[in-house]
Amino acid sequence: MRARLFSDSNVSARPKLSAVAKKIAIKLTSNFEHNLEAIEAFLAGLDAAQAYDRLLDELADTLIPNLENFPAMGCSFLERPVCSVEVSNALMRLHTKLQDHGLREYLFDDYLVLYAQFDEIIYLLAIKHHRQLSFDFQSLWPIN
Image 1 (cartoon, rainbow, N blue to C red):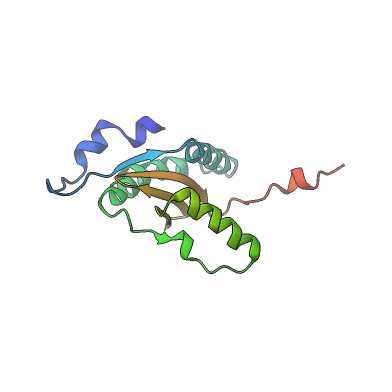
Image 2: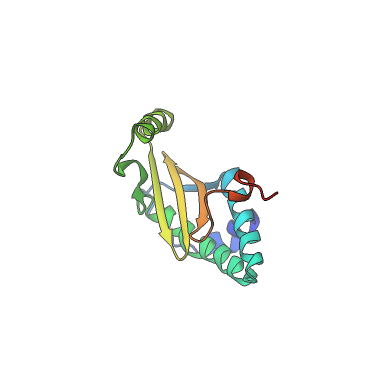
């Protein structure tokens, strides 16, 4: 998967930036890779395995090059309205961990991508298909 997203053919096909522009590196976190595996299983369960191949192509051909050239293209995750004390506290902890670096979300096709930029490195943190549930109801309420 990593090889497919970062193959030499993808690198050479990317547009060249001017010498003064800083080169942005894109790195996948282990959580992002686990999310991709979960998406692959989810789509296979829907008999839509070809959609996973399209996702990998879109990541390699569109999302990653766009982030390299426009790292702030996603919306700021931390600027969402806060509606509870718990969320406010969690956001304060997150601000501390991020040390004033941006946490952004980007919607493309059927997916939501969460990423963080630290100087010239963008870390892809998470990806979810919009139809994946965020809760595991079977483990919460097992059927006896």
